[in-house]
Amino acid sequence: LARAAVGRALGTLLPDGAMLDNRTGVGLRPDGLPNIVWCEVPAGEFTYQDGRMTLDYDFQIARYPVTYAQFQAFIEAADGFSNPQWWDGLAASDEHKAQPGDQAFKFGNHPRENVSWYDAVAFCRWLSAQLGYEVRLPTEFEWEKAARAHTGWTYPYGDEFDAAKGNTRATEIGQTSAVGIFPDGDTPHWSQPIADLSGNVWEWCLSDYRNPAHDAEKEDMRSNSVRVLRGGSWINNQDVARAAYRFNFNPNFRYLNYGFRVVCLVSSPIKGFAGL
Image 1 (tube, rainbow, N blue to C red):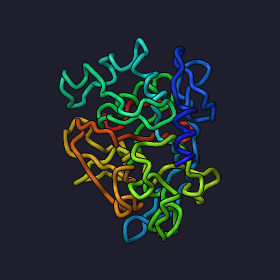
Image 2: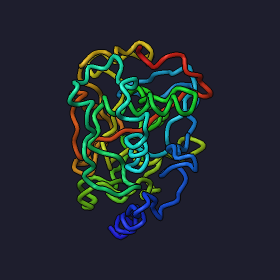
Image 3: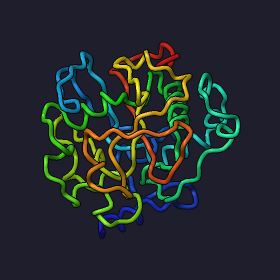
């Protein structure tokens, strides 16, 4: 609880939009773009649900969920949220595209919440154009590989639930928390730890819940089918914070415990956005 309070103090936005939390990967780069810390997940076998799967490619996943400060850069950019290019082919209504959801907990270092799947896809397209390589939502297979590797653990950090290793209902913070303040809950599987895969906010995945495609390029981005969410949140109990738990909701739904993180393929140039 004390760590969460310090996180809120460091994440309070100053009049110029800056904040005191200067950790890499939490805020913005000097050029005003989101500063993403990429964690490499190598190709190979991993635990998926009750079995094993193999992904035959490397990918990189963000260490943290996209933060309020980072998403705000997209909203405020002249070519950002209001640019119809980023919404091309998506089934979002004109009303949905006209106005973003309102952040419930306005701390720059907290996850951006009240975002729909459509909002998250539009952000990824915008950021891809700025960076020159494709950034997208993870498939649920990529997400679970990042969280579990080959271990088969119930949680990203082990088999036993621990309220001190993630922001769930049991932690009693009662709202989102600054990203990365539960280092003991980070994944130990990879060369760089990945934070907040259990609790804080639900994370949208690219995947269609009923018919997930193993290949991101085969996902039907024009569909309004329900989409996968992973990881549980500050509202939820420990059961849904399990690494294998699959949840879903309509892609236009915005709520104060729904957020996202991003992935990219290593040095992947833009060839058209996933699924289009």
